Image 1 (cartoon, rainbow, N blue to C red):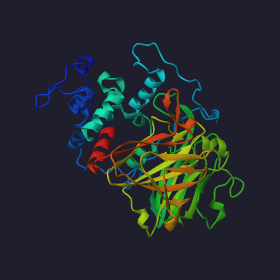
Image 2 (tube, one colour):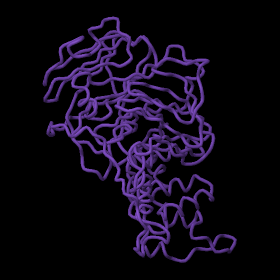
Image 3 (cartoon, rainbow, N blue to C red):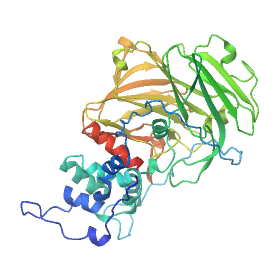
Image 4 (tube, one colour):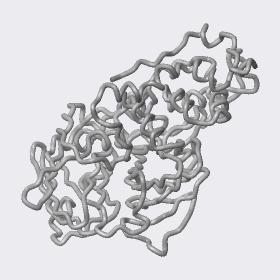
Length: 453
């Protein structure tokens, strides 16, 4: 049941600070005023409101590994088929200069204000929910940094990553369903043209997607499962599908046009049938006119769970992270910052991040404040060769699985470290996300419910 945020007026924001219980006047950035100015009354009740409107318990946010659920594929949208330029977008190279605008703080420039606005869009009306969870010193820091007292418009809007379709959310809410035909798991997907938003403000781009989404829905199966994947081609051109990393017994199932099969035409369907014979983080994507088709979104994750998990296969949350660097510039799961979903975790949890590179460039992923334990490469368990790092280069076609122990609270930057891929004169963009560590699992669930409400 949606709950509208209660955002105060400018008059409310500028009212005198209320006294604290001990009679001492509160700082304008104290937790009490932070919550009041940010309109927390509307959002902190979201989880309770959702619970009151449903008979089911608040689900755990599993980042793509929820309980199986049935659901029809999204209907494709007819859009023009012309491919836009494949060149990544570039940030302007001009350096910002100080502004005489009296609304810009002394010593700042338009760059500083634009950079702050990107973060305001990223957190949106999630701000007051976070304020109920973090210690007061953190709340005060966030309030000052984001200029909560100005009651900026984004405080009454959903975060940018909720205003666009997003793989992490879609996988959790409506995971890819299958039917059983004897002992075979049968998946039905469509291949569609669509208009796609890189973020909530940019004009849409003419993209392609499996089940009308980019990346396509994540396959999640078990080692040894028999798979039948049926793809209906709704494009205006031929295509094929390759399951990247699968070691096929029958080479004709490998999905490479004119090497293992003829491409299938508009209106036709093609069936791939094989055994998921090895565990790990694999992928699926077009293997025909691939520079254009993969570059425009025909890509997705194929995750095979092991029959015999290793100690490193024990984790609390699972996050698929697919990078591309063609249509729409530098993207994570089909979006650029601030429309990239954060990695959420409760303090003490272990998070699995599955890096998958479907682009043309290597990207060195850097996590601030934490080390990543690299436990698998290209789906192969590293075992005793596992290693720690805080920056991990992932080449095109590669997959790396890392485990992160989220042992400290906070909002931590997580981004490609090729700087033109992440930051420019208008602030951060492109291949940027965050790791948000909250005190408890219940806090994570409350944040998720506030986002979905």
